[in-house]
Length: 369
Image 1 (cartoon, rainbow, N blue to C red):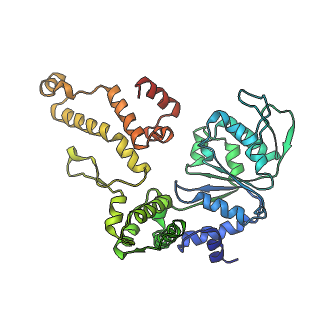
Image 2: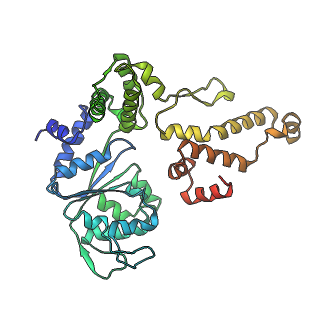
Image 3: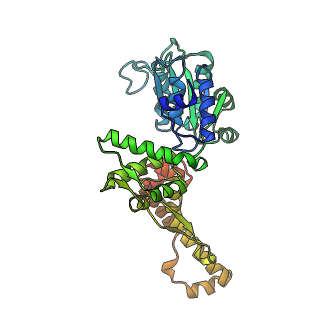
């Protein structure tokens, strides 16, 4: 099978050297049972490559089981992976197979592997090395033959150094590491992806295929795409749904693309300005949006301190007391901004605010949000 045939079969769109080289390596490693670690930013298509590896392997006739480690609560992840027996804990009303057993003789795709708790990492490592495990509450060893593909958007070496990820598991997983490039590093693939998503939308919605103007395509090719292929796909689908004349032009696309501009004319105007709103929440824009109110206050205080020095009496004579905002109110406002912008996705909001989900839950309760 040629690289082009492989791409067509597994819907890997692109003609850039980065993608061609990545597909070539993918075809080589797929034929073995070696563990593969996929790196890449959110939205670059890590799951597409996981499916391609499985589909081109000797296990393709068996199941590919995908698990998002970051979406499963810490307390039940072990049960989800390894299963449990009836009565092993409150709520365990039946014997249940875990994903390892379900994927026996097939492939287990562990997405967001960096989010896995350390205690579960220990049991995962043992299952990988011995190909056996015990269900929660069971005394019987279960043997499985499973190939592991893991994915992350984090630097696992950094996570190891920070003691958040086990070094031995890291070395076990990274037998082969594939780094999927962000869309901004392979802009020549954007026209092909646009054409692909337009056709997919037409097929899925029983809709005539749309055209796109050259100017609109130029706009898409120039955008930085912080949300990568996922953002591009959502943009095309939204534009197609909103178009009234069967053509995607700049008037349809421009409101769907976010641009952030940093004004640096002088010290007092170093603020982010929101020009257009995105169709989906994107990490970089979310950070600006969540913290913009705090940044305004900090910059105003800096300017006042610079003009008046450290003399609190002088400052007090010129500042309205109502302009002095307590820190707890600033914190509450930042939390509200983050929650509203992520549509109350507490995990994403916690990431933006750089606190743990547990801390965020406590703050929400403290501030009665």
